[in-house]
Length: 93
Image (cartoon, rainbow, N blue to C red; front, side, top):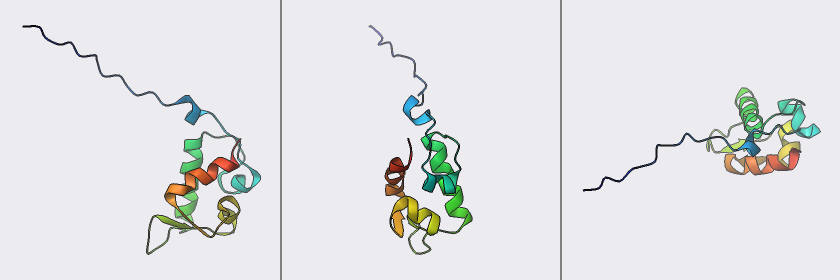
């Protein structure tokens, strides 16, 4: 009776594209700072800003109400947390 050999589980390595530091636009830099950051750090800093300024919609926690700084980044007064990452893409190089 032959036993099947299974490959050892490989540890997932982060995608290099996510870890590459990106320079934020002036509008985004007003919220997260002007230093180049990986996309993951930009999103994390945005969440810190959103929570510190109580910008999550009280009725629907998935929605983010933009203040003056975030309105420049998002281009509209309210966005869902799912479209936030897509909107950030326009503000990084």
